[in-house]
Figure 1: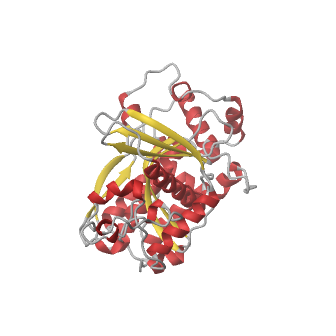
Figure 2 (figure 1 turned 90 degrees about the horizontal axis):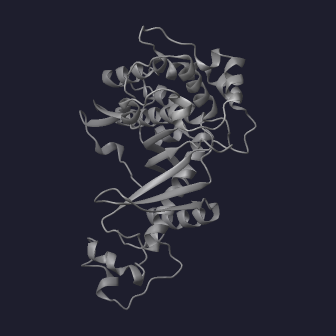
Figure 3 (figure 1 turned 180 degrees about the vertical axis):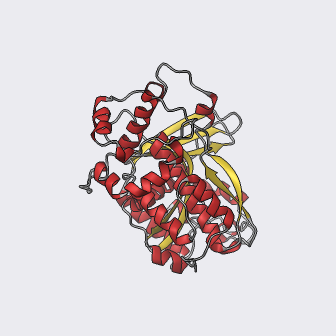
Length: 370
């Protein structure tokens, strides 16, 4: 899981921002209805605990949806099409009549697939200069917002930044890939993490366990954000942020061009929460993918179900270490090969005294003293 220290970046640092390319779209009746279907169908199934239909969510977030989707519906002549919520029963009728089809059938029926259709599946990165800690966090939130927007409209996004509050600790990460199912009744997004391997072999079980824990953390964070469980005031306090801080002119311009004008960090936090609140809970099935580093060929995939009890027990042990509530445990005997790559090898008791054995109950994420 990737971490971030906001106060480590100085003024005038350069950060990457994911923005959807501003490419004009030719609006035709078939594609328009397909786009409407994608936007309506993507988050229509919320978590079982939610009694709100997606239609009611659209009404609640109507103004926000309009600002996000405004630029994505320009024709070549420059006119804008009606927004989703303006279509009323027409959009809902069309949605009921459309069955699960491939992306080609749904979005490019009887039409050629353009090069931009292929290249646009990863959002473009541009560079933005920042001058404050608030700007740094604005970039992170901006990246997350544009990624979620892409998922809602295209059914796929990659390298999505995520932020969450787990057991009293703030965590950040980047989800490799999120897929919106197209053939299932439930439209809960599937979280995917890809691990590259230098050798043409699958990893040991201990490494697989760490990969599973990482994905379970992402799901826990995702579901909390989707349920609008984001403590804004604690976020500002913990990272010493001023919600009323005016963002840099470049960030203001980028957010405005993307369709959600924000002048302050507080504005972006509101967009961030509203956008995530439009998403359903993530799928209970998680996917780990292993690829060969040399040619990106697939070595194998592992699908597993989110286990809350297992996640809770493992994360508690991990956080005890990070909170200073316990010392690090030693690496298991079968994984002592890892010690050759550890910077603490020369002073580690487990290396100096090989007879030392780890406590069997400790989990892999806490085995090193670093």
